[in-house]
Image (cartoon, rainbow, N blue to C red; front, side, top):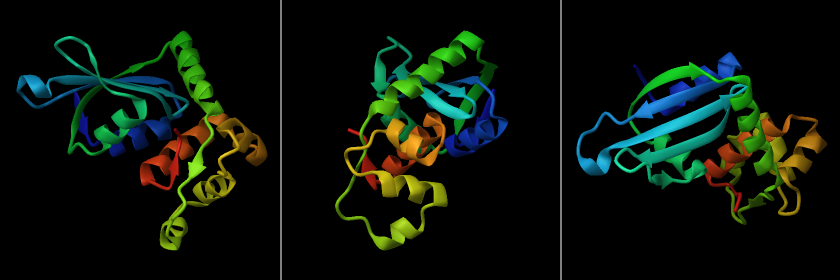
Length: 164
């Protein structure tokens, strides 16, 4: 069992560019705090993130909210296992299925926030117009769809776009 923050865990697995399943368990006690999570990484990108209650395996949060929630926790206990090729294929399909979403910029985004974005984030943010899908943005930038989807999730987490 390993321990780290969610951000440290994601960064470490992104750098490997491999396919992983991460199982996360709560360190807290009390029935309302007994939860588990599972992440799938395909080529270093989070493709699936599920959080559920241990007692009945009922879902706690949807994918994007689950990732944000895990980011705010002080530390996580986790184990790692390599994905099979079939699991990796299914995970890449999950990324691709989200590529048809049409992101929308929020009307008021402060200039200092835009200036704090990385070059890739600014490129993608500039193409978010409420009509282009993630797939279309990827084609324009000649980037893999999974990379664009991950940046869109990051931009959504920063509060500058919405993917609804």
